[in-house]
Amino acid sequence: MRTIKTALCVLICLLIYKLFYYLDMHFAGNKIISVIHNYLFGTSPSFACIASVICMQDTIESSVQFGISRIIGSVLGGIAAVALSLINANLFAERGDIFVCVFGVLLLIWLCNAIGRKEASSITVITFLIIIIGIDFARPLVAAVNRTFGTAIGAAISIFINKTIKAPVIK
Image (cartoon, rainbow, N blue to C red; front, side, top):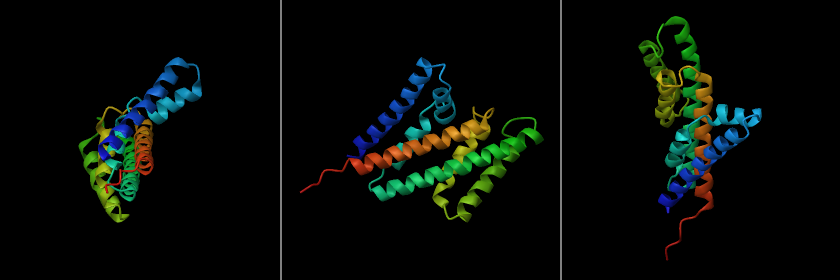
């Protein structure tokens, strides 16, 4: 049943992103739809789908905990990427300077441990690195919002599906 619920979560994530893409393309003059599509959803449902897969766990409680950790990680990684990209832009000539990347990784792992969210450290660092050295470097704030929002959507869908669709009771 978990396999089917996971596939359903991915389907819902993809459909939501396609819906906002469709709305943005067909109502191009509508600023509200355009802002929602471009700044909240972005162009890729990747993070929403990944979060929905990871958050689909054996129990609802585990799904909630994985979801919370992923959201915290995305927020921390996004904030650090925005802050350090501003520092990077002012101090170094090239994007994602090695020192800034390594310092960010050390800082974020330490921070996750300090706030008692050790399990969030990997997604925190991954989000940070994707933004600071990835293709979204030119717009780190938009990238951070996209990543965090996508993760929250995926986690919420996974938790909802996990709560709504129960595994069959074996007698």
